[in-house]
View 1: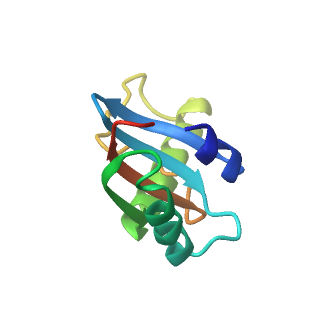
View 2 (view 1 turned 45 degrees about the vertical axis):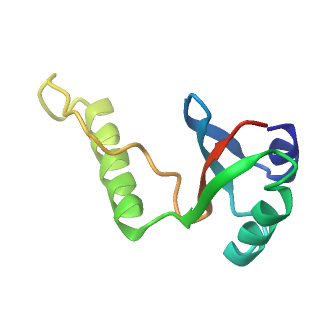
Length: 106
């Protein structure tokens, strides 16, 4: 994990169970191809059996805008005191990538 934390300006563990990890990292100046190459390079060292790399989807971005608007409206006291529950996790925007992996070494 330390290697990945040092590589990116923003690094967040989204999920971790057993040997499975889901990470959210900042895009910085890296292309999606670079991220795939980096994962290939460290796969043996960190005993990563499988991984995927994905950019934030447009759906996640639109959901993020909706969540932010809902939160702003709630802070201004414009609605009832009930809060809507959302099954979507807050996406940070187009500058993020998600790395899923199954590993023994991280």
